[in-house]
Length: 131
Ligand SMILES: [Zn+2]
Image (cartoon, rainbow, N blue to C red):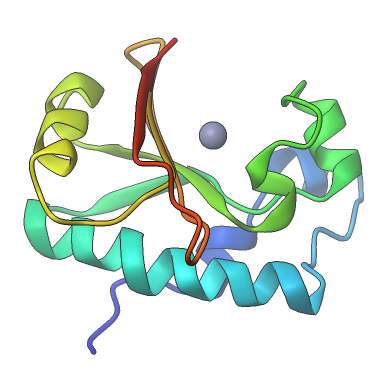
């Protein structure tokens, strides 16, 4: 499979850099991130055929706290990523993913600003939400 993403894109956090926090995932989170990448992000990229910018992927507990993420956010387990696509609204992206056969746990249009998607191998709820 040809991949359009790098692990560093999924680990990068401005908040972590600014606060001098090592946002390196543990092995379990890394494993989850690879699933997210293979089963969600890359299939979405192949479907949309446009560059996706990951705005937030993995966040360790400290980083998640600083960005005021939900406690136990799937971002802290490497199971979720937020992204934007130039020229496409989150509502449009959510609709395309919803109507595809791509597996996901939660798909969220967050404030019409970005799309959040998560994946848990074997436990996907296929829940579509909006904040
Ligand atoms: Zn998110």
